[in-house]
Amino acid sequence: MVPSFRLKLSNSFMLVFVFVSCVFGQDRVNSVKILNPNSIIQISYANSAGIEASRNKLKSAEYNFKLFESEYTQFIPLLLDTRIKRKAGNQTSGEIVAGMEKEFFDGSALSFYLGNSMEKFGGGYENTHFVEGSLEFPLFSSNRKLSRLIKRTFEENELYSANLGYVNTIRRVIRSALERYYDLVPRKQILELLQKYRQVLTLLLQEERVRTHPMERQQIEDEIRSLDSDIKGWEMIVGSLKIKLQRWLGVESLDEYYIQPIPLGLDDGDYFGKEYVENSYESVLERAFANDTEIKIMRLIIKNAKEKKRLAEQGKWDFFVSLNGRYSYIGSNEQDSYQRDYFAGAGLKINRMDAEVLRYSRAKAESDIISMQAMIKDRKLEMATRIRELKGELEKQREQLKSIYKSLQSRHNVYDNKRSRYLQGDETVDNLIQAFRSLVNTEKHLYQIANDYFDNIRDLQYLCGVYFEKLGIDIK
Image 1 (cartoon, rainbow, N blue to C red):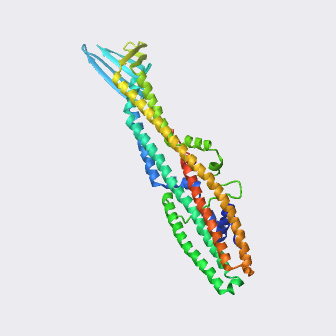
Image 2 (cartoon, rainbow, N blue to C red):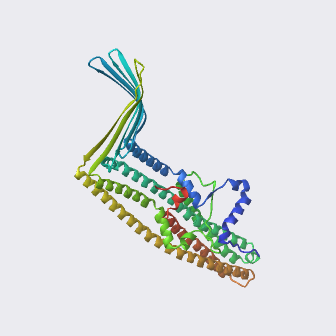
Image 3 (cartoon, rainbow, N blue to C red):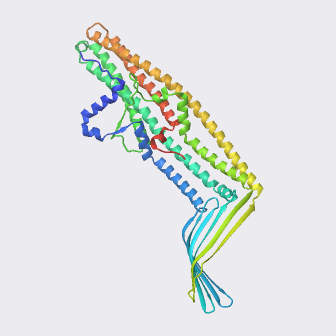
């Protein structure tokens, strides 16, 4: 008697690995790339043309943002300037200076120069080396900075939009790739189980009892043909999903990849999706809030709007202090005498700003803050509702999988018993086939529920920002 074929779900990966090793050899196994949830995140991110396009659009927006700021925050490392003056009385003077300048976004400015001056009058001249510098900075508040922030709004919006577009493209591409993988794995397992059970019936045809009873043999052959029809249908489904998966992975073929099954772990303590099933709703929600890129971007908008509001409230007056000075450290004339001198200056510039402009600036900033706060609240409510729904379904599906798995074990026992009794002549072929169908349908149902279980995990991963954790991408 040929023993019936059983497969423990927790050991399926090891059995497949051994099979691949035996058939293709160890060198072939070492060259095979593994497709699992983690590797799919990496592969799709690296290969997606859509992500690449969105990434470069974000870079373009970042460069445009920096270009705008650079116009107000320039650092000029080398400045050369020459000046020649001629006055009445045949008096000529000239200077040559070399130095650097730095401007800051809040309106502060700093400069430093080294120079030489020469003054000629009558038949003599005087030559002097000097250093000079100047500093200008806001004393209390800077309406100048507010004005620049307002002018920068367009570039900010473009940057936020590009940033949001980039992260949404990553989420869409990776979610689509994982969706095909999570659909493919259980359907591939259904195909394999049908092929497995076909082999079980093929081996049954070799038994003496079947060979000596033509009508019973025909019934078993009819069952094999029915399985063949199902196998062809599932082969088309699996083939189609592979094509869709490779499209989202950005690869030309899956021939060099091993599609790793997902351990359901129904007979042990470790299993796929455990953190979403066993962790509390509050901890899953906290993780989702902490990693949500949309919330992070909206918080950045609020932060910038609060700065604009602060400047608008304090920007009625614009106080700027300016300091400058020069120190001449070596001087000479025709009599080779030396002199050292300096001058220093200070000034205060006060501007009264247009109250109407400030009022509109503050009102706009407040509206932006309220709008973003409301959007964050709505986003959190949407996420909380969806996570509660998905987690509830996931917990029930986990219990359902355990129940079906126990039923499957019972169906195995029933089939083994009827098969043994049939070969001994104590059971009808009709009862045997009925037990066989019940076994096949139960295992098929197990993988169909697993597909729904994987779909909910996929959506929870999407909401919890798992992709960005794995890729090390953070929005700051």
